[in-house]
Image 1: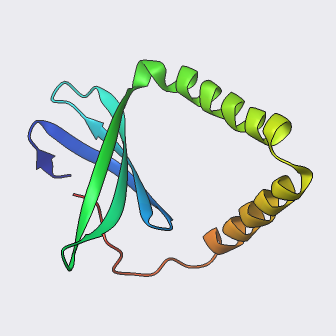
Image 2: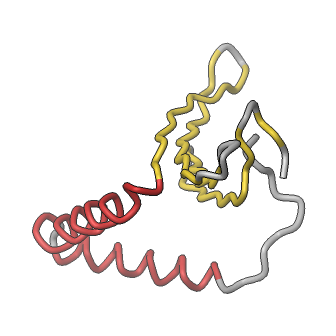
Length: 114
């Protein structure tokens, strides 16, 4: 567990999504209070170099349940009310494909968000 300012990272998970990568990091304060940071990192090409645009959300443990409920309600609304049958079928196919990939062994040497 490395110290980063006064915060210790406890757990980290990365989700790659095209040009974007999402990082879900559980951290603790000096007083062992836990929170989650959600970081979106988007790779951009500028002046023959790559750079990364980053956006971060801090989610505190007392808000986890409300956040999860709102996220699930929003996803269900999009799936149930906004997507066409064809788009929903494609999304479900992609979700099943992703579940299949998650059961395969992980590749060693993956990068970690610092």
